[in-house]
Image 1 (cartoon, rainbow, N blue to C red):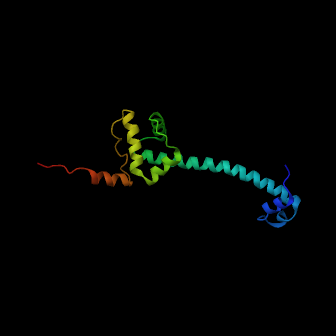
Image 2 (spheres, one colour):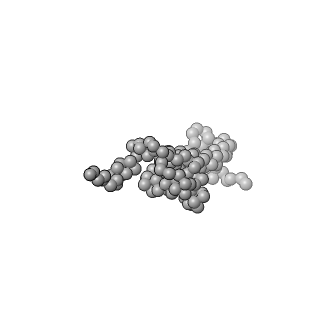
Length: 138
């Protein structure tokens, strides 16, 4: 389907040199630019998915669980949160994310998290210390 001359020149308006005025050169450059844009849209999806997975992995390892174990457990528990939402929870709502990790750990029959898990500089460690009941000394 041929694109008319005005449309090609309009699409090439931001290009440099003769590429913006000469229709034969502009047609080739616009076609190549549209191909690059198509590929870029696919790569953007791939890139963001890997970013989400990295964030989920970091959040789950803070609580002593690997990414694959967490995702498998969430699937078995029929928790229908996608990776984008899980990564947002890991960053913005660490207590909610910790609850999901603990739910998976409980349903898998696991005990408490391994020593050192969650003892980092995250927001969860300060809250746990404040929420612990005072020990009665007799």
